[in-house]
Image 1 (cartoon, rainbow, N blue to C red):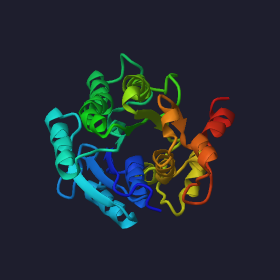
Image 2: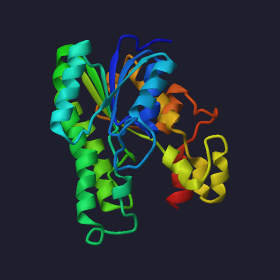
Image 3: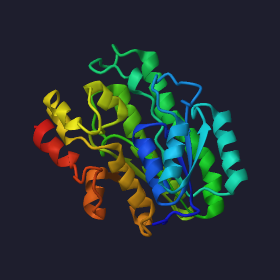
Length: 289
């Protein structure tokens, strides 16, 4: 079903993981999807990963939409301005913005509290995962206002303001939630919906490699880390976003924080293997105890 046919979407940070899966699911629904990131077929970001924005764009097109890769470092204001000028010139409008810019994995020093964690890595994380979202949202607003509607979704980790095991990581992920709530208040009169969405234990390409498994035999990794058995593929959050942006009543959700597991109960979607992972229940019963 082409529920998003002729709709223009931007997945900021769509090179891999959740961003890639979200872009593909939007394409599956018929959208034109701009895919941005720093890793291209001929240049690699500090993440040191092999996935590229061109690959994601190809997957979007293959799924039934149109993928448009654009190399953008969202911490560089001039590059973000040029991106929105391109969208304006080519399509004149924007319907959906997915803020999934991250790049914080190599900057996070797990187990090191504030005062011991490298300060500059921590500050760089805020630049990449918070400042980049602010810059991108700022320059998207004129297009949304011109359209008299729009959807902005902040991809985060967790649903509350509790610490997440690392000062700088917590600050970045909680900031995404607050940005969605604050933007929802600022933009409600313009019919612009802003929400935050979290996955559970995400089985990204990097996580699969870390455990030495593939998507086909990923359950083998549960022998190494029992919690991995409750993980979900990136396509689970992809389905969640597809359901949200095609929901004609999404506006009632503005300012809210949602999870893949709760949204799967509401909309009835499943992960690629037919399961419905519920990280919320698993966390309460097996991690938080």
